[in-house]
Image 1 (cartoon, rainbow, N blue to C red):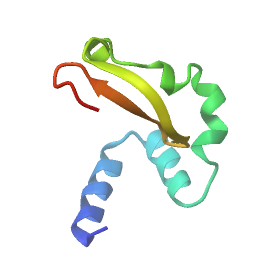
Image 2: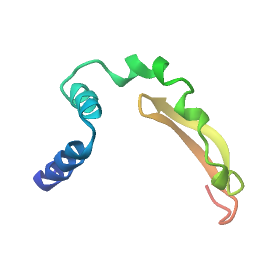
Image 3: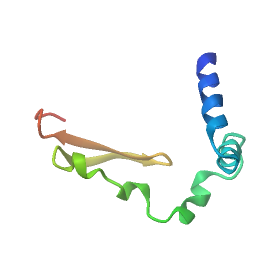
Length: 82
């Protein structure tokens, strides 16, 4: 990452409340992973799908998944392409 981007990240972290700063910094420093607190968050993020996009896109298949989420192959119904 270019050095200028570190400044942007530092400013963003600095704008967070102290407890959120601690959570973010613990994750960066190799502290408890976000996966370990996922059960505390309740509903999985994959279930949060945008209703605004539901009419435009149709999921065709799952390409992959991991700690950051699920990547899906989708059809754009407006443009008629994947």
